[in-house]
Image: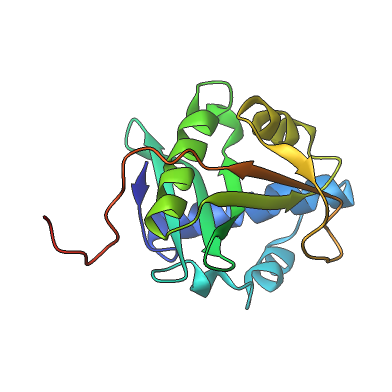
Length: 168
């Protein structure tokens, strides 16, 4: 998993697949290209760059397989967002690797706690979060597709240099 700009060709394709997956699940029918375009327009992804956030893409055999972002909410909290593993790559350990990369990205931003919100029907995603130490927390935000909130303290680990920091 490597940091990548949210609008690279692979990141864009993964974000489109992410939106198609979650929207289709919610609506109970395949999302149209027009609906996907509308959902991705002005979706806030531009904030997923330093110093306010980050985006990562995971590849399997050179193919874009997973993506996710972190958004710094305040000095100590980062939000996990747009976490997606293409169906063909689920069950291969990619979700765990993606969470690890995103938690590392959050630490680089200075976060000590990760939070996220999701829908109750996204059972697979919720199980992934629970397996990796995320626990239900009180709502920290609200919106039409937010039904459950999770949080996790990030282990301090070794300090991770922030982008642009001089090497010691």
